[in-house]
Image (cartoon, rainbow, N blue to C red; front, side, top):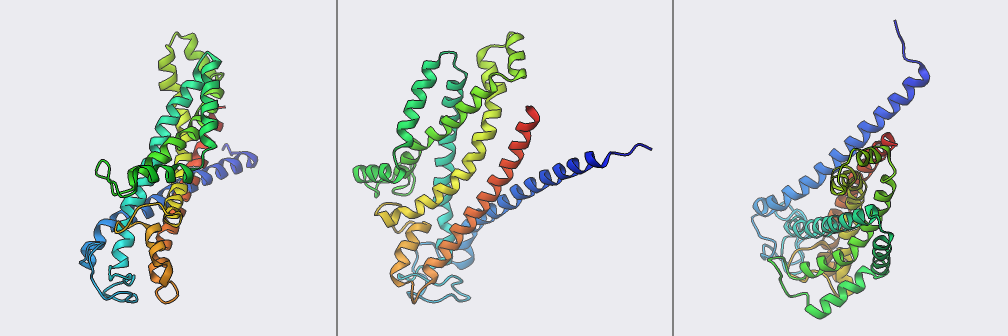
Length: 299
């Protein structure tokens, strides 16, 4: 009977446990975010009021009729907290993944370019954009265009925020993608593909791009967490999504004046923001673990 040496079995078992843990983290985080998304549609049905309807007395404490209480105008905080998912998740997903798509494409092309001039120009542009703070750029856009303007059917202010995020955000992904693509150029399977006569475009998009996306995609999930927190901070800077559109940051900003005797206006949106951020962070951690192991196997 053949037995696996103890020195071999332990690392294999440890790797298996890490793989299962990473998958569990991704599933748990995804389930939490999915539940928030489902509740964003069910909450108005369960309570019987829309997010902007005056459904009760102003500043009513949490009760069976209003589980999260009401705000200063009598709107149901439970409904508004979950409906705010539409805006906050929209900005996080679109902002992160549009930046991901643009930055990954340009960065991979720069990393695979034979002429170093293209890569040098790309890096100088990304350096200049990374130096621009998100809040400053978005405040400039909102002051120029205004946050009361609705573009392409989005809530007022959302499109302007997305433009500011994408204009700066893609540069970070471009840097990550260029570094990863440049490192992959010397890998054996890439060299073998070149020797077999595969074209540059085929090698870039079929062999290099998937490996690059594994890295930048993991960062995109973590970046979505940063974007949600950033959008929630904008109302405190005089920008952000204007009322009456439900958004976690705007809800906390509106409720700050009465937080001493009506804490539920601030606490429940803050909890929703925190739980969503933790869930996305758990997904990012699981993806990072799986991506790291995949890259180590390729080396």
